[in-house]
Image 1 (cartoon, helix red, strand yellow):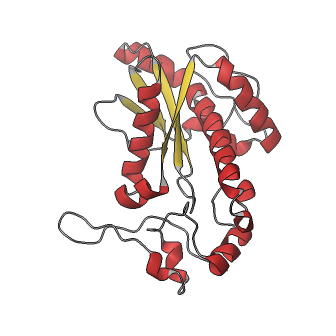
Image 2 (cartoon, helix red, strand yellow):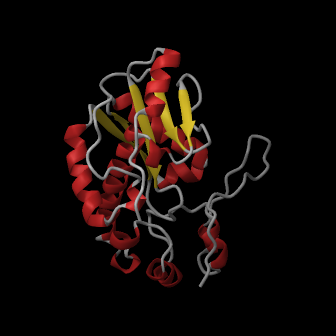
Image 3 (cartoon, helix red, strand yellow):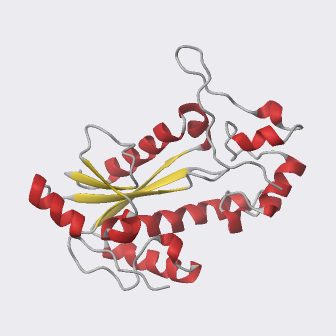
Length: 233
């Protein structure tokens, strides 16, 4: 399916309206997975013409995505990756875990960005970062698209490596997201040390439900359980 290539429109607008010079595109991967970290990439690209075919990583084939990530690592001005572990996700909740991973990425850049273009409609970063949210920014903004591809390829590689010790779960293929193989392995073997234990999928696993972690607010009330996908066989 043809798609419009990403542009520097948002970045130029930020430069003109805020005076920002260093602008980072930020995107995450792994938010909806049942296992593994959530990974955030911050990428600074300047205003150079993007590599051919750059777009949201989800729209690319595995082969093209891998090739493009390799090209982007030397094409971008700079990039950095931040991760939040399953334990941090269980303890903090997804929004706070996303912020932690994003801050880790942004603070690893060689130059602190003057502004951030964040994919999506929700600003999970907040102050002191100057943030412009862009829905489908991974398709429309060059820096966000670059971050999307780099983050996806890096996290997929991490999940494949983690999966070598848990072959039944198929992490190399599903990257920790629910799939028939992943669900069957969970039912048979229970969660691995890499699973998020506060998520709703455990409700449908009676033999493993005792492992579920529930976060509580400061007032002692249970917080909303993370995870939007049920265990739908």
